Image (cartoon, rainbow, N blue to C red):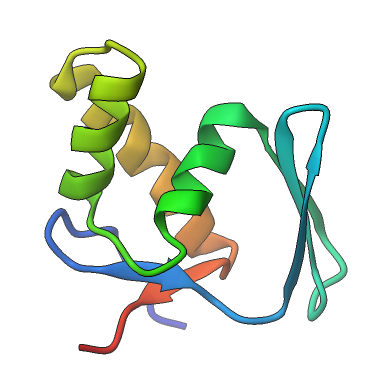
Length: 97
């Protein structure tokens, strides 16, 4: 299996097959395929929302750094780590253009 890495200016979107819900302010989901349960938390949930129509790391970082008053460098590092986790778990994919 080929290991993918998140790229800054590529659009990513949700993969199909997940049940998603809000639970006390956190975004939680279950993968129908694997049966795994994920708690994305609040910030992870916001990233998930930003991926609904497809988004880039750069676009997500720009939005989050404004909403959460965090510097873009720190935000970018954290978003990349989180997005790599989503990609590794098969929760997101590159958006077809």
